[in-house]
Image 1 (cartoon, rainbow, N blue to C red):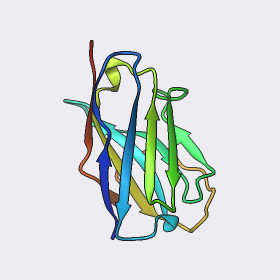
Image 2 (cartoon, helix red, strand yellow):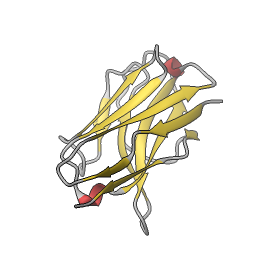
Image 3 (cartoon, rainbow, N blue to C red):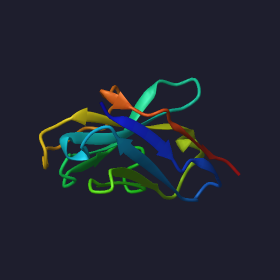
Length: 128
């Protein structure tokens, strides 16, 4: 079973940037498609971004497209979410998630939540 630990959250002003990291243990990252989702106070979870096990396919929610970038380093067992031009509406707890996949897959994914594995989350607050 995968264990996922997110880090990198914090308080940032509108227009600022943060880089979230997800450290993976307990299994090979090669066999898992990964993603990020978030949950804002009083709202349901929202898929933010996803990346195929091979790293060649990525996808983003319309709300973050052009501002966020997902990446992965399978050798280091890390998944990242670079968040630029942050807005107050990006304020949420951000979670890293993973599902079993064929290795080296470039299959398209859709941002979602409800992964087989997920971390405890990291808080991102965008406020002036």
